[in-house]
Amino acid sequence: MGIVTSYRLRWNRKRWLIRARRKARDLRPLADRTAALGPRSILLFATLRNERPRLPWFLKYYRDLGVEHFLFIDNGSDDGSADYLTAQPDASVWSTTASYAGARFGVDWINALLARHAHGRWALVVDVDEFFLYPFCDTRPLRALTDWLDDAGLRSFGTLILDMYPKGPVGDQPCAEGQNPFEIAHWFDSANYAITRNGQYGNLWIQGGPRARGFFAEQPRAAPALNKVPLVKWDRGYAYVSSTHMLLPRGLNLTYDTLGGEKASGCLLHAKFLETLGDKAREEIQRAQHYAGGREYQAYAAVLSDRTDLWNKWSERFINWRQLEILGLMSKGNWA
Image 1 (cartoon, one colour):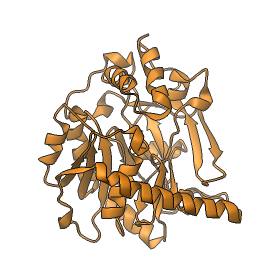
Image 2 (cartoon, helix red, strand yellow):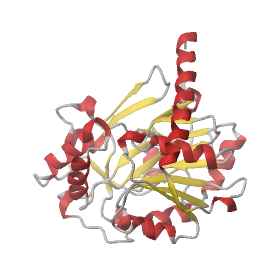
Image 3 (tube, helix red, strand yellow):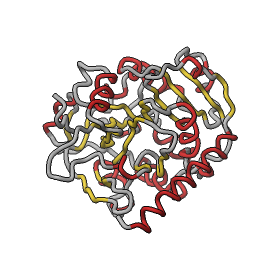
């Protein structure tokens, strides 16, 4: 990386941090319990809007995994999400009705809370339809992973977003409040992924899976990115650049081995493809608050109206993380 590029990235990082401090003024605390955080507390950060039915299972999943405190940003929900989260004793909640797009699709708000509350701690940043999976997660708590990362001198942990889907039309697959969504959406693509390297930020750029073949078959390069770096030992000088796809300093994006081996990595099981997606797509198209004018949601709405079925004869039924490692979708690396 040249001197000019290095200087530009440092300047960009400073700019994102200044912007985050300014956008923090958008946030109004509804329940701030962060004074009780310990120096080693494992934190989870998420931004949401109208996700009340998902929240009971989401909280249970991450509590069982070992998350000790949740920090939520509610962006104008009117379905009771904010009230539900405020009542949770291990959650802090901020509310805003400001523009999601104007906050760089929530990244500025997340950066602000990370700088204020996550410095020196491990922070997991996910959407409420994403479920973190890592090697040995069935027998080892999240603390075991972060301790190993600390001992190995690693500051970040990368994942592939693994889109999960049901068999049959997506619109015919209801999920009850509090239900494990993967009792319904338990299929995934075991292949069909394209990987390139981002020369500027150093991260891998992954596209493919059911979203590419089902919704962007005519424009595969426009398909959503499936690479994320959701788990980071945070420092107040860090900043996410684009969702959790990449961040600065750029060394945090090097979550893969460049010498031919394998670094430990995980997956985010993505529970987007359920009955509620059609209504969500129509709402987000109307709000026009997502990337590229909601292009992704426009694609969902167009295809879902035809009662699309993402399942095909190459679909794999999800079993556990070891299955994903065998398929090369995640790796335990040298963590034994």
